[in-house]
Length: 224
Image 1: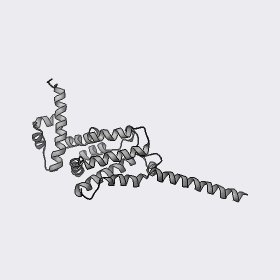
Image 2 (image 1 turned 135 degrees about the vertical axis):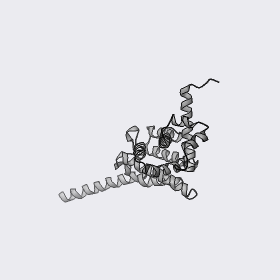
Image 3 (image 1 turned 180 degrees about the horizontal axis):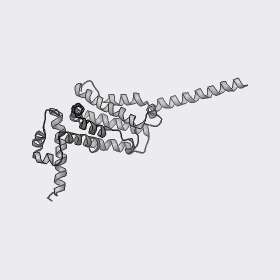
Image 4 (image 1 turned 180 degrees about the vertical axis):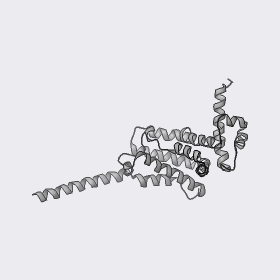
């Protein structure tokens, strides 16, 4: 077997620390675990932690960035955004990814960590600022998820992202508290309620067009 280079070993250690940190901090809480605990659980030295991350906050922020950018779920979401096909089908596929991930239980540990770290960061201004930047909407990074003929399309793109993030985090937290009664399909239900459906918007457009036609006829009669 070919030996790994120093750079490859460092990258493997970094990934191992990120995965381990999500599990350890998710189980014990941000205040309930230390970098020593993470290093021990990962089978690495504390020096290996500090050669990659300057503090507990830096490590947890790396976990959040990893979740948003480098996981299977993140890649699946990006593939949905990159799909040039029907906008309504794209939105439905996005909901499929969220629901399937939630059913598989892959969000639970991260949701616990994110909830706890948000409270932790609020007590540390520098971390709060960094977390704000990590979670800040970046609509220019890809195609908008919201169909252009939907009711939510009138909302600015950054606020569209904030609404979907709030729904994501909120339902993930509720599932931690009551996993039996909070069905992941509630995410799709909420998105549909906010955005509408293709049929609803088609009917609405037709009704608006008919209303304009009727108004025009009335105006013509008045002129005659």
